[in-house]
Length: 161
Image (cartoon, rainbow, N blue to C red; front, side, top):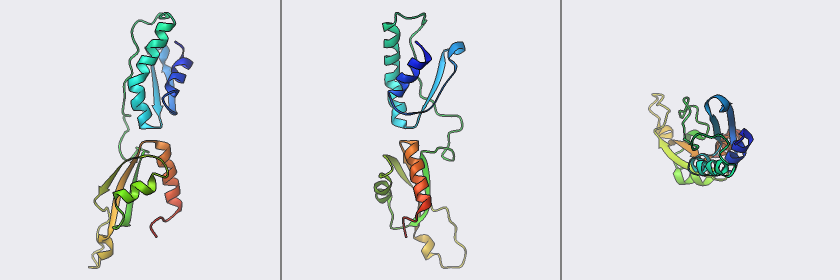
């Protein structure tokens, strides 16, 4: 089983953001990162079957044990660094989860939309009616590329007037 074989088998499950084989020779470990969460989830289930089938078909080629695939979350994973999530603040109160999901789905499939307590605090002038009508949402896409496209386009427009 060669590194190009492993890579092309991984790519069959979706576009790869990165593929590292630095430890393939010494530890028998490769790291594949998918843009789309669904691709990673499918690869965890199906990749061992595909790779083990390839090993069996090639006669084993000195492989000592079956291939294992694990789903990992990066050490730096947080909503602050997760590019699949967008924080939209100061939206009109009339905008709700369904509106956002419908609008943002033009960029790709939205995994979830979560209402967030408004991050803005009152200026203390007693006139915070306008502020009370603002909303904030965390929007999560399945695919990092879709979230990046949405962010780029939202930054260039004022979709809510």
